[in-house]
Image 1 (cartoon, rainbow, N blue to C red):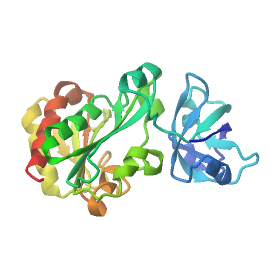
Image 2: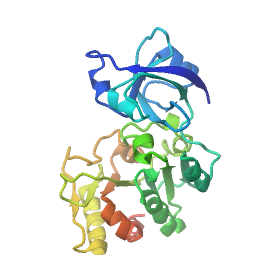
Image 3: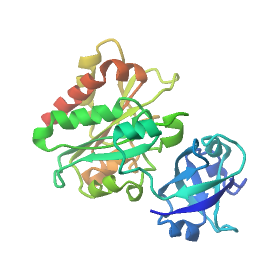
Image 4: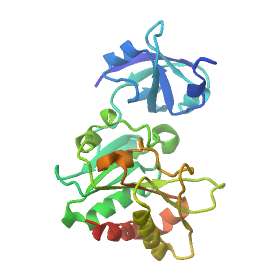
Length: 296
C-alpha cells in the first residue's frame, strides 16, 4: 500500500458539477493516483489529521498541476470537518487488515471480514456498512452464515467506527464499492454465487415503510423474504418490496449484492430502519436464513 501528500481543493464549477453534489466522491490526477496503486472507480482514504479521516470513491481523474491536487465538493470536505481547502494524506489502503474488531472500535477504525471456504457458490451474506456505520447489519450477515454453516454459506462485511460519526466518515455507496480496494471481497467477487443477500440500515422520514426488500432477484424470492420477515416483526413494522428505481431499491446492476451473483441478477437487498434493527435484528436474520435454507 502507498500514500502521498495531497492538497484537497474545491471541485471546479461548472466542469465538475456532478462531483460537487457527491460528498463521498473525489477527483485526482490519474498518473499521481497510479503511483499509489489506485485507478478511477477505486476507493481511497483521505486523512486530514488524527481526528478527521475517511473513505472516498475516485469518480473522476483529470490532469492537475501540481499533480497532488485532489478535488471535492463542499460536502466532501465537510466530511473531514471543514469546508475550507486543506492539506491531507491520500492512502491507498482502505480497510486495516491487522486490527481485531475491539481494537478497530477503540481506534475509530475500519476493517473488512470474510468467512468463506474458498469454493462455496451457494449463498453469500454481506453487510458493507457494519459496526457503527449501520448498526447490527454485520451481526445479521454473520448470523445468516452461522445458521447455514452446514451448507458452507459465506459472509463478507465491513465494520467501521469513528468518534465523530462512523456513517459520515466510512460509508461508501453499494454501487460504488470496488473490489480492488477491498482485498477480501476481491477473493470472492468472481466466484458467481447463486444467491447473495445484503443487510443495510437507512433512515428517511419520507419513506413510510420500515423495511424494504429490493435487489435484482426474482419477485418470488423477494416475496418469500418479505413474508418471512413479516412473520417476525408482525404489526410492529411494515415491510415493502421496492418497485423499479425506488429509493433504496438495490436494483442497480453495479450494486455489490447483485454483482456477487452469477449473471448479476440474483441479489436481495434488505434495508431496515433503526427500530426493527434494534428490536428484531437476530430474528430477522434467522427468518432470512430459513428462506435460503430451502433454496440451497
